[in-house]
Amino acid sequence: MEKNSLYFVLLLAVMYILTLSSVKGKLGEYFINQRLRRLDKEKYILLEDVMIRNGDAKTAQIDHIVVSVYGIFVIETKNYCGWIFGNENGKYWTQVIYKVKNKFLNPIIQNKGHVKALKALLADYPLATYIPIVVFSIQSDFKKMDVQSEVIFSPKLMRTIAKYKTETLSAGDMNQIAELIKTANNVGASARKEHVQRIHETISMEEQHVSEKICPQCGGELFERKGKYGSFTGCSRYPSCRYIKKA
Image (cartoon, rainbow, N blue to C red; front, side, top):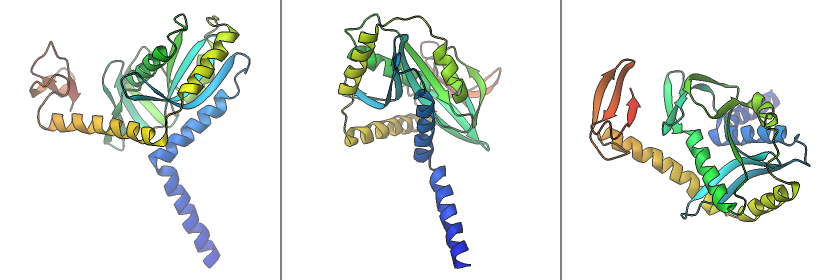
């Protein structure tokens, strides 16, 4: 009886650990890596969990980079569940689970920052093409998504990569680029911690501004408005500032 109770407690502990966002994120990245490791190693080089300086004393943390003769795939993974709402250019997207809303940085914009950092690092390769891809887990469901970029579910990742068939890099350049990225990926644990903290601070700062009726983009005054699709908070400096927060 005591042994069964111990097993039950251990099972509950494991289930709790698996619900932690950090653990879920790492598991999601692990499963994506398992898929990417099946790529032809003569034409694709996989780099995992890369962090590089982006030139302005900040860092870019990139979940997966695949350097290939067909271009450089820059992959941002989101192991989220629930409904996902977002558009191409909005600063934040929204996750809804049982009517609870959580904001997170627009992964398309995040990935644009990653590409910018890589372009600065790889300035000697101006002809290299970059293919940013955002990958969500199948536990999520897209709702009211308005995007033109590659935003996909994880089972489509390999097919998405495979559709790029035009060789833009030689095998030699591919290997040299991979080595450059590996060399640059020398940021320590403290910088990684600061990177995560800065993301949380950015979100908290915007929430504070909005609560004080201050536009987080331009500093103008925010007003409650009604539109065709319901109430929203908009900036008094419209149309020069187009900040919007849906109710």
